[in-house]
Image (tube, rainbow, N blue to C red; front, side):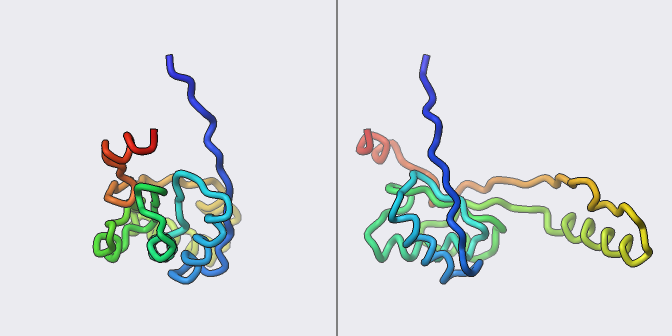
Length: 138
């Protein structure tokens, strides 16, 4: 039976949720590295990947990177970005319903309870380690 190791997790605050913030997040990450990074959004992830490349860190060989938003640019990057796709239309409907409820004076609008919406993990190159990479790291 395999014993699972508890993963080391930490949170790095990003001063701006954009490309530059991702580059700065890489600098903070590089002081105490982990095997994978999950970013606030795709732009932060792409900034992280660019700074990693400039610093000689290989994605996904040295660190797996995942974004959030599934923006069009996620497929244009090298490596292509693994990302979480959210149902934007459903998010918009829930937000609109909450706003209308607030404007009508409803005391407990939909946002009073957490609303879970379905998401999809879209696996691309930034998180895929090949069999060759796995043999090198063992």
